[in-house]
Length: 163
Image (cartoon, rainbow, N blue to C red):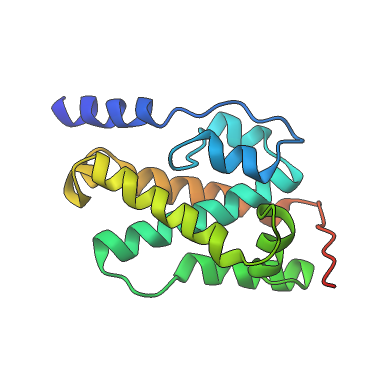
């Protein structure tokens, strides 16, 4: 019962705002400490917001795995990159430059903001073990998998202009 309560407290810490279908990437990135989105809201996301949330979720999950599990490979980012290349013919970095960065100069800046946010959230929870016991790892994994499957089925196609 104690673990259930801890997980529920962790989930309430990560309750997500409602996104409209026209939500910008910046609104999604700034709306929540970790960008975690409830399954109900995931079902409402579409188009750019859905794809942006997938990129964010992949980076967050890989960051957690790197920080708390010692996994050095960015497995989920690579998987999203392969999906974007196969489906759209663009890389994840191209998507980040065109849809997730106001400056469109460097996708590493966007990624670093997300990474820093994950590190701060883990620190606020008291470290890796408390974060894991509060269900953070499971939430990140579930969100990433749900979003990945939605993007696989999505019919939206990003228009990317590389000048």
